[in-house]
Amino acid sequence: MTHPHAKPALRARARELRRQGLTYDEIQSELKCSKSSISLWVSDLPKPVRRPADPALASAAAKRRWEPTMRLREAERQRTRSAATAEIGALTDQQLLIAGVCLYWAEGTKSKPYRPQARVTFMNSDPTMIEVFTAWLRHVGVEPGRVRFSLYIHESADIPTAERFWADLVGITVEELGRTTLKRHKPTTDRKNTEDGYRGCLRVDVRNGADLYRRIEGWWCGIVLAARSTDTDHGTRT
Image 1 (cartoon, one colour):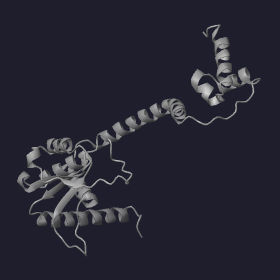
Image 2 (tube, one colour; image 1 turned 30 degrees about the vertical axis):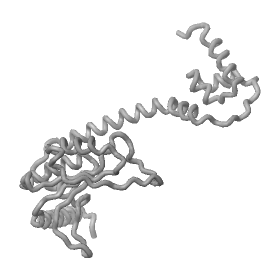
Image 3 (cartoon, helix red, strand yellow; image 1 turned 60 degrees about the horizontal axis):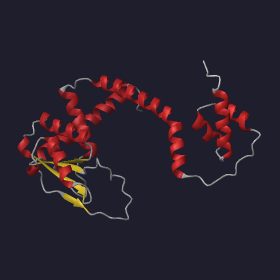
């Protein structure tokens, strides 16, 4: 039941805020009541002169208005993510093989007509990508001694912390990392990767990897042919 004095108190507060120059939206955000009620309570007061917006107050008000919606969206995102995670389950050997080949062909170094080469080099800033790729290397029989790791990072970052993070992730000591490559900091560049969690990119090289690279090329060709065949079977290619 609504307290008998609630409405008069809200009305008085709404009128006070209106006299201070607040808009209907701002009063609604402050009092958590309907805009129609506010309109009835303050309709006899002069319309406030528009004042320069305070960016901090505007941002805080917008955040308050959006918080319920953002909570609902985050809950829905988590439900969708959990359901999708459950759809994967355990990977078969064949599925892991295909996943790793696709990962490498998207992010790894590839031979080009203008730069023919047959080496296996993979670099990424996403720790989970590195985890999947190193698991795939083990799956296809690459001995740990053939794998080399090195860090590429902006010189303005916390380099020792980043080196420890990547070394721990791949199960080696910091001393076993190759030489860290520093990218020069340009103050005029509007970088987005400046947060505390920035750790640069880890490069993964496979020594004597020419044969593995040629196998990756063959696996990828097999995936492409299989995809084309599937499309044809489904009648989607002419």
